[in-house]
Length: 496
Ligand code: ZN
Ligand code: CU
Image 1 (tube, helix red, strand yellow):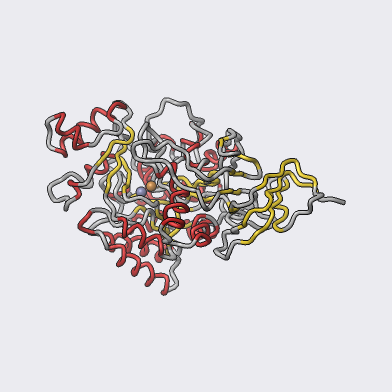
Image 2 (image 1 turned 135 degrees about the vertical axis):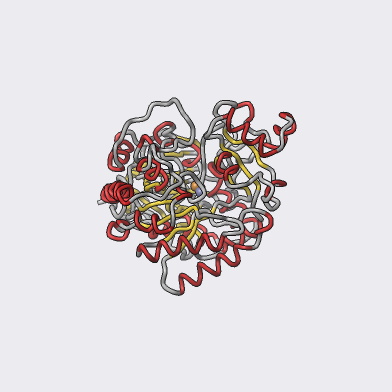
């Protein structure tokens, strides 16, 4: 009796996500699962057979650092992520979550209607009812909870015991609903006013609920080591794993500090602490221009940061400024740079997003080589000139850093994009390609895969990645988005 499958990928090289070497094997899918890895009989019946010889077949990429909380509802194709092989986004990073909804910091003041939710369970149900093209998991944003708990009060003061209890209640609900942990963004409003003790107190339900702590730490320049130490302290005191977000040293004066921060992570790991990090493979970062001003980016004591180029990615009320540099607008407005930046925020909108060239390429590679680093985009997909990381992170690692520069091996890179994040964030059934696992799959040509998105023209899909499957359905076929809404709400520890 011949086997029946829905899909057979014939003749590719399977890299299974474990970090082990790739091997020639067919991959057969039935429903949403991988049914066979190995030779598939020629007489097997299959609805679709694709010759993928010369290509790698690997698990779908897990974007551990996403900000697509509302994007997946407003633009369910999520073209930027899907076309680069991302099959699961982990949203809610940098302290910016979706509960309470009234306090959620929408990246763009979009007019698009959103469903309403009153809890993380409600948010995940909304995703399940209105699924996008990829899977969605979430972290609880501490900053959004803090804004909600202290709403109407002076956010610069510490939270009261009552406010802490409110935040804990939201967190407990979220963990029960399947959230993966809690994130902070300690350079942002109002997270930045929380003391270490306050964060530890709010994080208390994480240990029992099985969640982790992810942090955009308090400083990525002069205070990088102290900031990482704080994140690790919170992990130790809370008894939970730690994820350092977008590991980097920012600002020319601090280039090279990543050697020390990596040594610090190694020491913690030797002590038995579960500390890892994520990284996007670019020398420019991107965040709210208002937060940059507030953190002294353009100020006098900015240690060389001022001479670095800052470009405007998304300016909601002045879209014509998108793509311009803050310096060029400053001379046009005839204002000192800091005042010009403030004017841009005042006129362009509080959610104006900028791109700043603040990192050293050697640091990017040093962090990438380290075993504690997994891959995440930190993409912010709004505006006409968003950071290209939203479109090119994964193919850029595979093409530029693996093939062209040999910074890490191919199997290792795939591992950092798949099984390593699945294990850390407790995503079951995903991250490894084996019989029985969920059929989130990427097919790419290791000889040609590359990012094509640039700062000037970011919304360009990559080359060399012809197929992407989510839960067994093609979301990219022959290099074209199929518009299939194959994604699911993914809950911690649940194999579905
Ligand atoms: Zn961040
Ligand atoms: Cu982020």
